[in-house]
Each structure stands twice: as structure tokens, then as C-alpha cells.
Image (cartoon, rainbow, N blue to C red; front, top):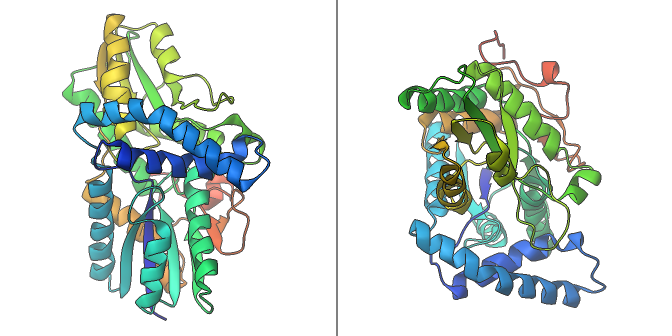
Length: 363
């Protein structure tokens, strides 16, 4: 059976112009239209356009400030690295890269996979922490594209949350420790604090069954323990464009109130450098911290670490072989996207789903 993997990412406009940014934002707002009560699809599209045009000037300014987003280039490189890793492991599989909100869009890539004769299609969202508007929405996009094409006979499967992968935890812990060591910091001195910054999500999604909030808490707890850090604070990067309630506390509030002389900020829910890290953290949050007299350090996203391709390959091998994971984790039926073809590492109890880093594992 000819297999294809679509590596799914958010995407960002590569040109900071209204021509590119407004359609990008419009797609995001339309995907999340259920946050407001609009009576018709026409009304939802009109509201999405209104919100996009209102947000666009600020986002364009952010892109200009950081010299354009590197997200798409990094995502393409990750897909290429995954393809090479799977080839080295002896798997014949075509790896595609698709974006939810910029070109190439998911529907275009699904159509390409059909043209290529793919019989087994696997969706791999490049978001470790499962959320409704990321992991779940991107797999829904694949299913919608399949349905609209009338593509009968294709076997479609997908993975949602995978932050429990032991190698991924090790990778992030190593990056955090390296940042601390290179800066000459001591997080046991009481005056240097660790702040985990996670992308926020509307509270309505949590109330509707998204496990994102608990996944953030679990991942931060595991990551801090692995890095040997006893205390930390979690803040959320919220985008409250609609006036709905988002996860709390805002990371800006954390920085305003934290009792410290220095802070280390780790963007735990991101697997690329993008506007949320390069503009919101490196510029806006740094400015707030330095205005308070805080020494600000930001942990880089390890998007190009060679181990990341190995993590993604580990995640894909059970789909390709039908055999258990070679590094010991177990998949269960996803609860955030409760359909038979969607698996994740979050639905089983922690001790059943994935061994902790450093533990003995078996195939």
C-alpha cells in the first residue's frame, strides 16, 4: 500500500503585506467561528473578514519588526528531515508539507497525494500539545479535502497529541538546560525564575472537551522535573480578538507580577520560531521585563535539532508498519477528536502510554 505522510503546520505569511496577511487571518478566524454565535455561514465569513482587517495592521507591524516569519521555511526543512530519516530506516513513503492557513493549503496537498497514487494517508500535526484549532482542525481539514474530492478507498489515519514522547521531552529539557548554563544562571538561587509560555486557547474549547490545558500543565511539570528545576510559572500567550475568555494567566501578567531579578522564558507549545516567539516574546515581553529591571532570557525553539526528525519518525513508524513503537510508547484513541482513525499519546494513563525519559523501554 503506497503511503504518504502530510506534516501539518500553522503557516505564516512570508510577506508582511495586507494582500497576504488578511487572507491568512481570515482563514484562522473562520476556523474558529464557533466561538461566536453567528446565524449563517455568510455571517461567519463576514465576521471573519472584519476581524482579519482589524488585526492585520498590528500583525504586519510584527512581521516587519522581525524581518518576516521563518516558520514556513523551518516547517519544510522538518518535513524533508523526516523523509530522510524514514528512508534511512527502510520505509518507502512520500512526505508532504501542508499549512492550515497559508500556501500550500491542506486541500491542495491532499489533491497532490491523490494524484501521486497514495493509498494510505497519514496526518502528522507538528503541534506536540493537542488543541482544537491546531491538531484537531488540521486533521479535520484533511478529512474535508478527501470528502470534497470524492476520494474513495484511501485509508486515512492521523495522530494528535504527542508531547509525551520521551525523546521529545529529552530534547526540550536539553535545550532548556543549555540556555540556563550558557547564561550562567542558577535557578536555585530564588531570584531567577523559570516561566513556561504556552500559546493560549479560548476557555470555551476547554469546556467543550479539549484537553489542552491539562496537557500544558503535564508537559511543563515533566519538563521541569527532567531539567532538575523545582519551581516554575506557566503563562499563556492569548489573542483575545473576539472578547471571549482565554486561558489564564496571561504571560504578560506573569512578568509584571513575578518576584525575581531574572527570568528564563521557554515557549513550550511551539516547534518553530515565528511571530509568537520572535515578536511577542523577544520584543514585546522582553520590553516589559526590562522595564521592570528583569534580566530576560528566552529559550530557543529546537526546530532544527536532528533529534526532532527522529521523534517524528518514531511517531510515524507504528502507522507504517502496524507494529508497536520502537521506543516503547503506546497509542490510544484520541478523546479530543474521537473518531476511529485518530490516535494520540494522551488518552491512556501516563504510565501506560509512554515511558519517562531514561526508563527502560521495549518494542
